[in-house]
Amino acid sequence: MEQNHQAWHSLDSAEAANLLASVGTVKYVSANTHKTSLAWSSISRPVQELQVQPPVDLFLICPDPLIFALSCGLPRSRTLDKQIDGGSEWEQFHDIPSTPLTAISRIASIQERRTSDMRHMIRSIYEIEFRNSEGKLIGIARGTSLDFEVATGEKQ
Image 1 (cartoon, helix red, strand yellow):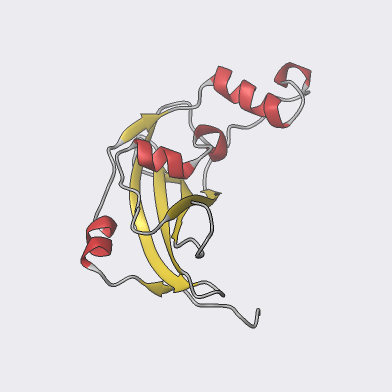
Image 2: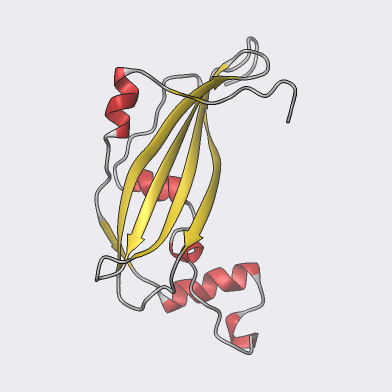
């Protein structure tokens, strides 16, 4: 463990409580063969050169969970000076069906900490659940937004 590691703590404010209660507009998404082929071609050989049709993974349907959640109407904290994308992760529990999935976005957590140079930082986790037509959870995508103070003299 790092010596200067600062733990994340729950953000206790009225604004955070309101944001945590936010749920985005429900969207219906499906695996599009053309989009899937393009995505696979961008990270591998062209699909037509592969021996087997590549599987449709959740990251192909939702390549950027933060942008997806924001497009569903969820707010992004702009409390501090600068916002950046803090990364994405995907958990897929079942194969992606050919029928549309229901995507429900929410703000899963908001936490704060101080950086090693004592600047304030807020981390918001956006979570999108993907369910099939029977309501079975197919997977979850998470996107992180970091909102932080810039150091004195640093460009914004």
